Length: 225
Image 1: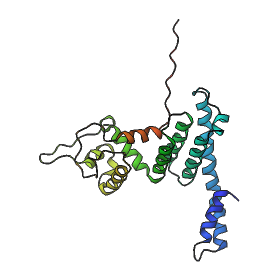
Image 2 (image 1 turned 90 degrees about the horizontal axis):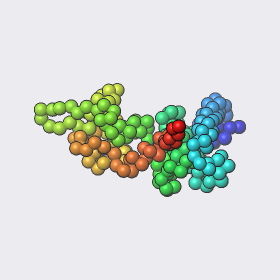
Image 3 (image 1 turned 45 degrees about the vertical axis):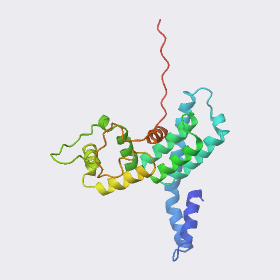
């Protein structure tokens, strides 16, 4: 039986009033979906690593297989990817693996903490943090008031109109990002007045975003005759 399905079966069996027949049925139903999720994850990793070996000097699949740090990161990211269907989180986890493989990642301890953040966060967290890296770049507008100052969530609404009226949800996400040390101390809630600086993220927030984005490589200059 599929490994992930076996784990689910074990968990269901421990629930009162859910005996073995229910566990067997649930495992049978979910096994194809979990297997598909696992296969798609590893296929994506395989394709991107193959591409990476053509861009990074002396990087081979064999060298990665012997790299303890890379293997640990891959295992952690794989476990997190198996728990979600959200594509943005899966892409962030995959990019983290690629950055470790290409030697573009922070120290291992910080890698592990960042991966834990990806697992904990929702796509909304990642979208808001990316927005806060450079609000003006994404077209944010500052609403002018005759009295008082513009709040953070009013500026967020100008880029994310689907969040209008969801300031409590925004506030929860902002508090999580603040607790992780990814946004400035001045932004401790959605009702906070907009700070007087362009970037709302901290250095650590920028480092996290870089870690979960696909690694960039400078194309070699073409020789001119």
